[in-house]
Length: 156
Image (cartoon, rainbow, N blue to C red; front, side, top):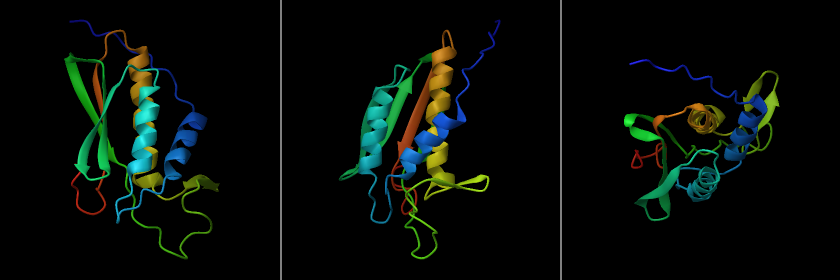
């Protein structure tokens, strides 16, 4: 079987930073478990994607749902990219500014959840779109953005 090389579209750093900044802006703090607004955003963003995602919510607890999106052909193999939408509370006095507003400090991006895990969610979504848009016959990509990782792990 001859495997075709894929020349993936380059995702711009500006696009990645903008999406990550939007995700940081959602105060998805756990406890108490306030992921609904970021989940709503991700559902809308995935439904408007250039990739033909099938998007659904998986109820975990009342008012708390995982977001699961699938695109591509599972007969050609599947890849799961997952990460959590919740963040721990921002410790009062530990931030130089609003923790839910992304900003750059020297060569670093700073914002609640940028390293764990909102930056990674943005990267996974954009990488999946680039792959699915460029591949002639892509295997399945599953994005699973889950709730409750920071406290009980019920979403996973």
